[in-house]
Length: 400
Image (cartoon, rainbow, N blue to C red; front, side, top):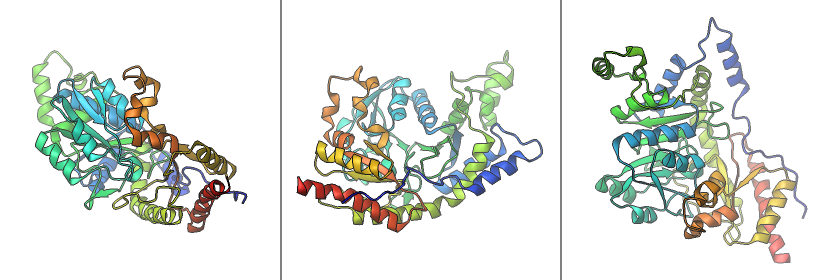
């Protein structure tokens, strides 16, 4: 059986013609502001209302959201450990290192691709400063046991929701549980501002710090008048417009990002419903004797289809990638971030030789897991064709 030609990118039509026209109309306005201003503020407010949190801070990427979240954590605690998954995007772990913490790894649950609760709890000790959960590819990484234990042990939860906009746990959106949560609006995600990210929190003090860390550490970026007055009185030799409380960053976004984000948010829930339907069709039509199809999908919202072989087999892997290439189906091996981060050069110099072998579930996905695109205008017939192509790998096994 020769593979049927299908042209299938990782993401399609994530910015509509109407979105582009709205940006053009904005630019044609009378002296439009381009750096962050009222549209950024309105986007932050609308996002907070959608997510169900008090505060949101719009930044230039999800990676910057990671960075300033960990920078704020560093203002509250001494150096210590932050528990992270080995299956995540590089910036989660990099932000831990960049802020002077030690990453401690917990292996994943194969049915969610997120850190396993028992593995997390085994790693918590007196030096644990936070658990940094990544909700991988739209799956939920939380559990009642985890949330209860973190409260009991007084360990902060930070959520990376960059791949899981609209996913829920117990009917409540992911990103509304943690002390802080991070989102990405990169083009390939559920919604996009081209590049962009958001940090969310219910903590008033943290919110003011995030605003300052976003913009050079400047006190004037705070919306807390009492805080501004306090700094001005403490440092009378300084111009109140240029008091820098922290050695921080410039990770602001723009008004164009705000305009695009506000428009994209209006379509997010509708688009996500289609993504959920697509995933159900995909898993129902995939060969469950060859691929993992029993993912925990309650509350999930996946911008990509997970493809994971049940058994490690290099020949099958190579044949499957050839089939996908021949059908012009774009894919990424290793799922989130290219697989097991402990195999990457930046961590090999820190940890023991072959440290990645201690995380077998992650390492299986590293070599025998992929994702392919799931987007709202994807037709049911095309999903089934993709599944039939993938399932032909099983036919090749039986012939060989």
